[in-house]
Structures are given as C-alpha cells and as structure tokens.
Image (tube, rainbow, N blue to C red):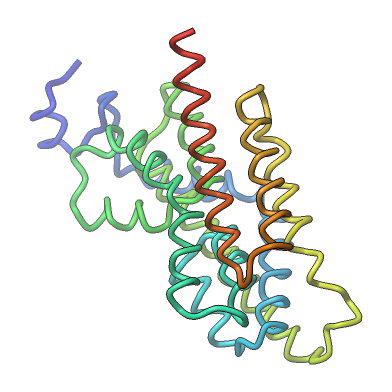
Length: 246
C-alpha cells in the first residue's frame, strides 16, 4: 500500500484509489435517486411546518441551505415559537453531535484532499450519504468523489423540496386543520425504530421517551428536550461501558 505522503501527493485515498474521477462523482449522484422519494417527502413536510410556525418561505429555505440536517431542523422548529435563539442553537447542536463521530470515521478516506474539498464534504455530509459512502468504502470501491456526489445530490433534493414545501405552505396559510403538529413525533419515531437493534439502544430510547414525556408535563418551556436527550445519552454510555467490562 502506498505511503501517506504518496497518497497526499497523488490525491488518492487511504486505499490508493483515485479521488477525482468524474465517473465516481456521477455514481454518487445517481445513487441518491433511490432515496429521492423519501428525502423529498420529508423536505416538503419541513417546508410546510416551517410556514406553520411563522417562518417566511425565504427563511425556511435558508435554514435548509445553511443547516442541511432534517432532524435538527424539525427540532429547531419545535422550539422556535416558544423559546429564544439560544435554545434553538442548543437543540440543534445536541441533535447534530452525531456528525462528529460520523466525520471522524470517514476522515481517513479523505486524506490528500484540499482543505476546501474536505470542508465541503463535511458541510454537506448527511446520514444517507454517509451510509452510501461507507458501504462503498467497505466494499473497496469508494472514493471521496463518490461521497461528494452523494452529498451534493441529497443537498439539492433537500433544498429544492424544502423551498417547494414552504411555497406550498404560503398558498395554504391555515394549516391547523391538517394537524401538522403530529409530524414531529411521527417523523422521529420513523427515524428511531430502525436504530433500536439491541438492549442498549432500547434502554436509551425508553429513557429518552419517558423523560421527555415527564418533562413536557412537569417542566416549563422546552428544556426537557435537551435534558432528556443528554440524560439518555449518559445512560447509553454507562450501559456500553458496563457491558464491555462485564
């Protein structure tokens, strides 16, 4: 295998594969087409919900372009009208902490890229593109070009569908009868269920759900969202450590 210095000089990844292939970039773009129906539907719902909580079409679209994280955006909307800007930032930060681990795990495959391309890859990384790219890397056929193609494909889908949803929300100003408030719990349940694969993840889900429910009844404001998430995360870490040492 080539040395790290050679990889950097020739612009290759840790497996010694060319990283700038247009064909790999196109393959990354094409791979996102299978995910488009779900991504577009979720983004349309986000745009509609953003209008419901008082954002303009431009503000809703700008959030998608600047944040590009569906779970964090829905969480921000949930506390938008009842909490200050600090709470919105904190909730978004907590929800997006997973990207630190995801970025760290994929960073070795981006060695040799320019700082600008690494920053672009990090900013546009999503759960779906991460899954697509890591599967390719594990199979020995991945590249940073493929990752960037998948990232940008999903970024385009999310941004355009978010704008469409926001514009549709402007055409339907009274969204109360549609009960879009149910979208938050239903969307997050849909994201959660596939992740509950063992006893530890089940315990984390139960603790988070129980604390959030109790907090919504007993605590003022929306701080219970952050507190329940942090508490459940600590339970997960403690359970993992105990399991490894048992």
